Image (tube, rainbow, N blue to C red):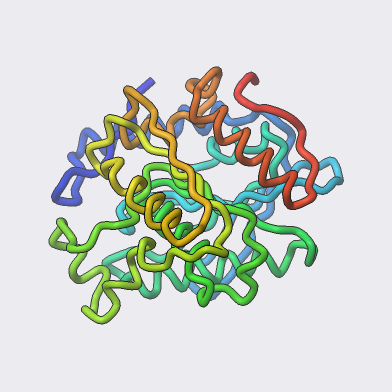
Length: 290
């Protein structure tokens, strides 16, 4: 199995790394056919990047719905490349949404966050009023999900977010260490709005922050900082660190080749089970065995 390769410190990928990444994604997405799926492509705005994939179980019933934001340093990514994540989440008894969003350098972060807001609002508008939504993300996508969970001003009804699951997320990264980020998150008055730690609140939905112990791309101190700050204001946050896992390992865990017995997948299944039960949506059962 080719290993997905993350971006280097300068934000670029070598040509061969890009080739192997595409090959690897083609393989793991080709294997992502564990459960029957009704798929719907939905436009949530006017841009070619304003589309989301909605994967549903064809059997009627109330299920948790998980919206997953992919990563890519706010500069790359396609919803089609994360069918494998949706596949594994569906084995847990969830329906799954994977949106695209506009990317830097075509837009700055304010527009990226606006897209994330629009996608969530579009999904909530299509769910029954009593149905809550679980937000989940990897890397840059985890930062987006954390902001939408914590900043109550971003959504029309923040109470409909049941909880947040963050995989290897950057939550406390100012001052920026990458040159491009000063422009990406600019202009300067907008810098604080990019940091989830600035929005901790006691009444926020629960945060579940998962990180690899060997992550050198987004170090585990990010999740530690957010957990401690959220707990300090009386909010609920839990952190889990996985020995021997790096940045990409936490999302690769959801591929069919890696998920059996994987502690990340097992923990996410348990978290979704608890959040789904709290929201009144029955679960199918634990995943990771198919």
